[in-house]
Image (cartoon, rainbow, N blue to C red; front, side, top):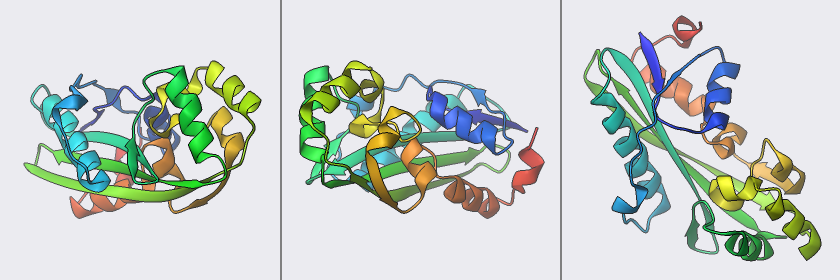
Amino acid sequence: MEFVLASASPARRRLLQGIGINPIVHVSNFDEDQIQERDPARLVEALAIAKATIVAEQRQNALILGCDSVLLVQGEICGKPESPEVAIARWQTMGGSYGVLYTGHALIDQTQQRTIVRHGVTTVHFAQIDDATIKAYVASGEPLQCAGCFALEGKGGLFIEKLDGCHSNVIGLSLPLLRKMLLELGHDVSKLWG
């Protein structure tokens, strides 16, 4: 059975490859602005299922995984920053504080016509960093590609003091949650190793 990742995220693909699953990447191109939701858990679940559903309409006999992440900082939902200026301002707010990262996971099993939707939650504690370091980090381009304005597995990992919860969830895909979802659908993850 094909395992399809409905995401353009190289970090999610690398996480799957790291556990022995070599996914087919099929990007949904879903317009995320279509979903207006103030609750971060419901928002990431709605985005994940929308992306997976679009891809499922174009595939057959596959497992399709859709994911989406946002960071909640001081009550504000933060996706990818729209500009370097937004990224700098966000880091000035986050530094020395914390955010709560939500990642929605939607797994569609076409062979059983079943869908499971869940979300992972991880609290991220940020280091206090000076403005020059913030500007240098933003100038690297990395924060502009990431929900929450940082990549744990990249340069951003330098500025994370502590995580409470699943670390792979912060990278965009909770591996423990994926394992539980596969089990719930009756799949042995070792059968997906390629």
